[in-house]
Image (cartoon, rainbow, N blue to C red; front, side):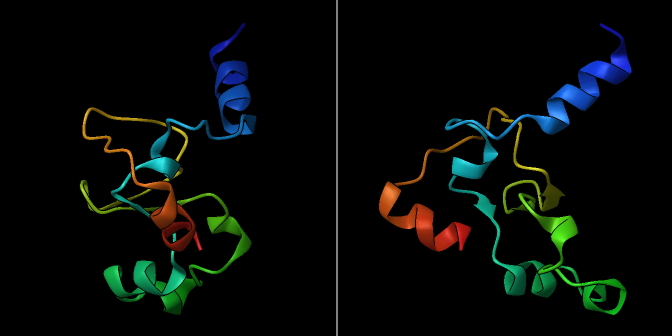
Length: 86
């Protein structure tokens, strides 16, 4: 498998239950992403389809795709998961 095909397979794969999308630090709310990145709404919107599955890592202060996982992962209670991913 070539490097490019591995990258394509990774990007096509869904996020797992223990990936960034289920981390306490991961925030997908478009308004909070736009607040954290002034000027983003001038270029596009955090509600655009290009942000699908992406979010803001509050720990690293970066926009990430949510498929990975780092040592700072903190599982969030399921009651908060729906609110943070909405």
